[in-house]
Amino acid sequence: MLHEQLTENDVKKIKEEIEYRKLTVRKNAIEAVKEARAHGDLSENFEYHAAKKDKNMNESRIRYLERMLKNAEIVSDQSKSDEVGINNTVTLYMEDDDEEETYKIVTSIRGNSMKGHISTESPMGKALLGHKVGERVYIKVNENFGYYAVIRKIENTDDGGDEIRKF
Image 1 (cartoon, rainbow, N blue to C red):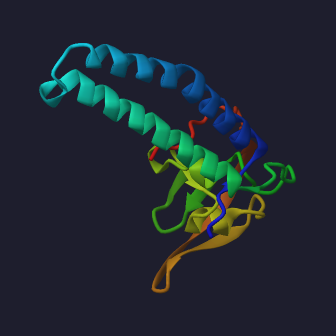
Image 2: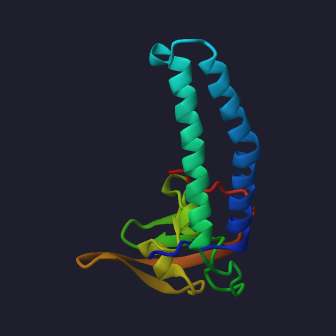
């Protein structure tokens, strides 16, 4: 079974979301179903079906998060100050493009390439972990393709505000 890698901060955020969904969202969803049911004929009651769908989506999310916690592998977000680790923002010089790019290294549940958040499970994340400023790193994308990047800067940027990815 695949174990999701989570930091202590990830676990805290997931527990907070579960509690919020159980105490607030669930209560509101049950009330919405009751209110919609009171409107009469359920076969053509759009509000009832929408409320039931919302309630079921919330319950699915709670189960997903609880399963994630149960199967999680807790990883440290601590790294040496001069090495790439989780929650570091890394500036890379991309040799092929002659450009600099900046990425934040995060656990897989916080990965979001649109925001420049690269998972430790991604080819780039795996390649960069543990390397230092000035090192030239080969990032292997697949058997036939890879590229080199030079680490220009490493910053510790854990603001704890990243969202847990939704599925």
